[in-house]
Image 1 (cartoon, one colour):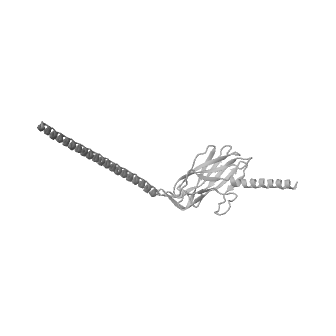
Image 2: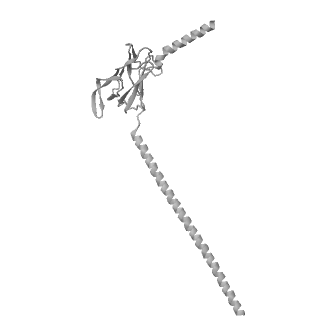
Image 3: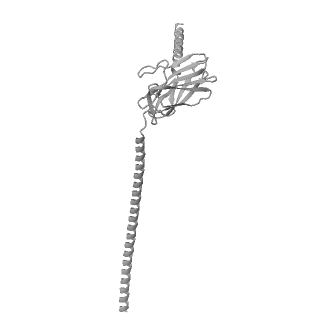
Length: 253
């Protein structure tokens, strides 16, 4: 009886842990399509799961990283959702394609014009971003998720390296190192040079093989001529000997 009570208590405790930890596994996240390289452009998806059984997600607000304003922020239309792009003046202008910009997009808001994200489903919200900062390893986006029952969940806690993930972590976009175009060109040129060297080497090998074949043909021709010469000499000697022998026989008769 005691053992069964302990087992039951353990099961309840385990269930409680799962219930309490569920939100940590189903928060709003951001992931790039491919890579998000420093200094480049990328399309990212804000993935929003519905964590409730009795309400739908009807609104998502994403605030961009204020420390790294972006010159270009273009959300992709999503069926069933209205999109509002908010711009704000910058404390410090940023340069883009030779022009100084005094304002930039600071928030993007998606509002459902229908049922939204129903229980048991998730939705992706694509956005094109650029140019990504060259002096940062990540961008932090703070997201606010609103449900049809007016509940609001704020995904705004910034994860800290070496610490456990917070209860309501903000979406974080990791930035990869930029590719060196010059290095890429050098690699291409090196490849072309390698191809050229291979071609020259192949040509030299072909020439060498041709010369060797010609030399072998020449040697073969010389050998054949020598053999024929020797045979001719032998035949001639035999003819002379036969003539001398025949003369002697006639003289003896």
